[in-house]
Length: 443
Image (tube, rainbow, N blue to C red; front, side):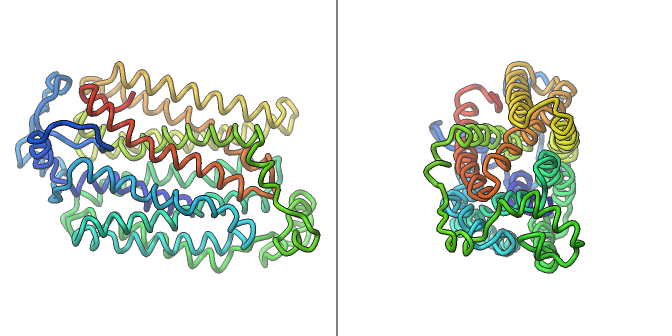
């Protein structure tokens, strides 16, 4: 859970920081002087009323009101430049993601995760200085960050497959990935409050806090973590024997596989229907989740016309609800499997269907119904979005841990490749609709 929290905080909080870094008024005026074109955009604030904002009492802000609302940035980065910064870590992630599962299965998830989080922490710590110095160097730094971020999920998937029996995997999947929602709920509230501070202009503190948490995690992980339960100093022999019986006999080290002549069945995994199912679900999950995490602060500012503190609450709510939902659904799914009410396969299908159809319906309602006069309805819909999205954990994520436990790291790598396409495509889709559909941010 902690490694996912570190990873998501250091990646996605750039969305909150960007809201505070950019002089949105100046950027909007600059954009009006150019001929509109299709870009990979991140939505930017405007102080002029759109047709939707004209219905609101608070649609035009003077300079003092902008500062009071918390949006007091000084960077003059165009919408295209902002989008590239948001996407940079995904490009870096995409370059290395092909190999991370292999590294986890061959070298062990412990060292792979440690190197990844340490690299992310260093890059995050340097971000405020580099961003103030040169845009293009900052873009390169975010790409390097993405290289180190890639091992986080495969390493945790490999650890979960070794440390937890099949009957508990929906629950542990929910717990491990809870760092995502903690970062996107509690972390965002903290980030928006840091953003409003005058000390160091506020926004650099977001990066420094995330880096500090990352370095602290590295120290604790290096001391306590082991690749296999049999190597742990903190388990009894009875616990080690139980986990070996449940999991250990299905896991071989790279040296053991070489000695037995066993090769990784890469071709069979790639062309498996089960693999295709989980990577398709992961693409959809990353697409919707990235759109919500990266752009909800801008959506709350520009479409719902909220101030910075209200923005933090609206941004945090769906992920806080998702945290409760995914853990509850994970426990419930494991209960149904233990009682043999549902088979593991049926359980994954039902919960994944709930996530996919539910989130799709919520997005459609928000696009067609919500505007700045319906903030209460927007808050309720965001809560339901978080509830439905929680179903993906006992759904596709549990399936990815179960279809080939010995190669869980490699399967996770496949799902991350599909997810990376979703991460990269989301800004393009947002950019198209922001440019072409009169300010609607979610379609």
